[in-house]
Length: 384
Image (cartoon, rainbow, N blue to C red; front, side, top):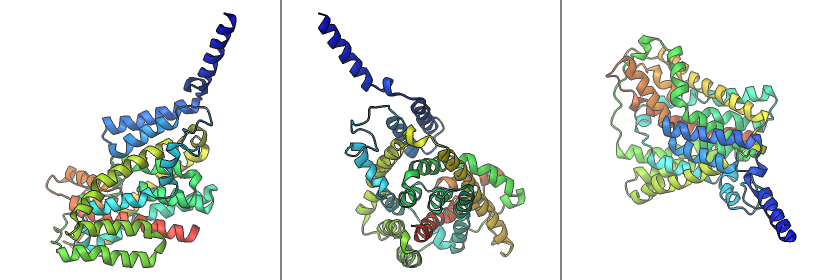
């Protein structure tokens, strides 16, 4: 009887040693709370739910304590999560996301008013501003490049670049990029109001001209030739972006465009969100560098938004009356599509209920997508 009791006691003791309760550390609890906050923001505040729900749940999954060697963690070779994480680690998922983005994006606003691409370019100041700051703080050039790309407010691009330049920092960079993408409606409006006058907010822009089918078809072909020849290292992102757009605009590949913009991008979004969330294990994520990355990410986002708005104000000095651009669309130069364009619209309506800026803001918004991919290619070519 005594031996049976001892056997049961030892068995229960061994079982308990494998449970999460036995292996739990304060860091796991902190990260699980962070995951719950992400989910709450998505459900209650409707902040980018397609991103924050998978990421938030992934953070919870990635921080369930377990005993090493069971091959269940995202960083354990042979585990299912590790195989799924391969698409993040090797930069497979981001180009597929860009394929879907291209297949669902209408570049008409940019084609009808090409000068709006300059706003998208100006907003990339956040990337290079954060890069310089990160260097001064003490990060290596490759780490600084991975941090700087957060300013583009483009999660897939941030994952793609950090997977090449600083794989060990990819979790913090990706979470930071996606967090600021989700918080666009919170972060950008105060900056826009601070940098513009009431008179500037009331500027009415000319309606965009009608773009022909031929222009829409030629646009992705011309753009891939121009951008890829200038920055060949951005080809994985730029190539898939313009390929997806050609599928959409050619009108003869509707099934492919529908698949790319629907089921495919949804599946990849689930996988990238969940695995990026899982990569935030407390033991690898809760470090001083992670906090610095979040601070620098916020700084780069502020610089990017400010750069877009201030560039429009400067540009207007050279434009005739009637052709001026409302600086409230300057924030849309970051590539958080279409949230930053919606922010432009909402801010404009607060000062004039009949001044609809959404279609105008979509020009710099899609230009920002191109711009962030080009900036990533530039950083990759110099730092990789």
